[in-house]
Image (cartoon, rainbow, N blue to C red):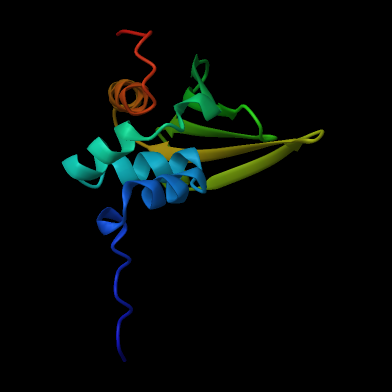
Length: 131
């Protein structure tokens, strides 16, 4: 059986890459930016940052929330110390609004949340917050 060839996204012209990014949700953008230094650099050049506002929540759980300016979906990374919950996606409806939470397991949730926050703020060019 032949394996499909990977899509060479980094070899596309810049405008084509930008169109691909417009179709991505925040989770896909963050995951793409973590692949390599080159993918992080390309991600930082994109002009999608105005489409999202970023909220950092510290309650019972540590959370990074992305609110789209034109969408009715909010996306959140939620740090958890429950290993069984790692990678689980939980969607809840709140009227016309949908909340999508991705649970991320960590032995040290505060440290990993801080690192993820710094990465997200760097990628989305929101340098107003410091730690």
